Image 1 (cartoon, rainbow, N blue to C red):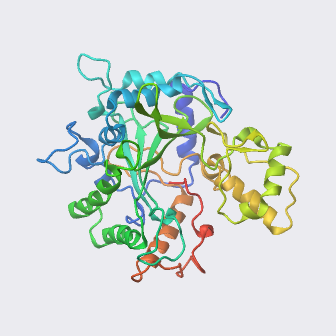
Image 2 (image 1 turned 90 degrees about the vertical axis):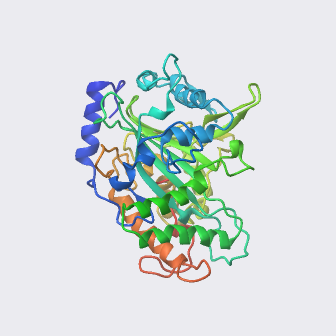
Image 3 (image 1 turned 180 degrees about the vertical axis):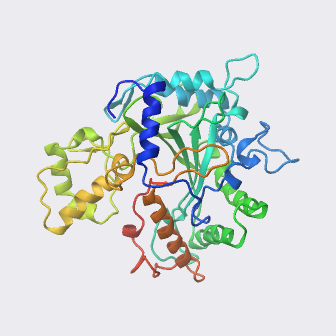
Length: 427
């Protein structure tokens, strides 16, 4: 997979590899309370059409799940076309992040040039955004804290709500690029009662026929709560936590990037700026004595499944500017397999990394939610299918009483801890 250019011929080869080697096939999610990839929902007008109005009293469904509208809401007072253009143009030059470089991928110009423009201008027409909805995801399992809470107990949040999109060629609607984008919003909550309100809302989807209009009405009521500008204490009033991308369409190898809203004092504007990959070390550390020393020094923390990697350690950068993925396993030298915490520490370190999770640690070929064409569900990895079952069990435990309980259901035993909520970034 290590090739210097991925244009038409080599991109098609990469796509063929992904779809022929993928350990799954296109099928609708087993639990629509947790992940929705039913084309009856994804191809709804809420996702495929938008008038350009942020508030459309004549049609409350207008663009509710449309990429252009969500990015416009995220842009706040900034020009939304410039906001999205600035995000795309970040691939055109080297990005120095945390003392590391994410090399330019200049073929992003193909995406920019192919994006439909507002008539008579060079501005991106966000009502014609060339991104197709691949899934809507409930990550209530990422709430913090993840222990049993009472209705009045203070909490930090209720987890995340996510939209996953895939680029396509607007001149060829039957296309599906190997380039996915995931918008990850915080589910705002200040106490356990508000967490339970979110849990009941997601759980209520099960009472409706999958893909029915009433199902979509209930789903939109949930997504409107986290996707709009209803977070006055956040930049642009947006609850967006981060935006992540996973692609080989622009160049190889596969690369994952992460972006966050950032205020620019010089222009007094807010932009979507690339940041270090959260909890994912630079793969340049693989096999180095520094990595072995770090894992040895933090073996018990890493073994607990509840460890956040620092940006730097002993003066060395840890978190990567991006995460490159050629399906190569992590090498952690000089750390013995025994005692047990060391073995778990090495496994968890790799599993929590972007390229480990999207590769050798989960037997996944790069994507947990794959590109799709209209009328088809997105492909889900086998690992993610198991995750959907696990998360559904956790949700069942949560809504089993008036308080948010520790999990005690099939497949989830003992007090609910971070060990039962791994992989905070996986879809």
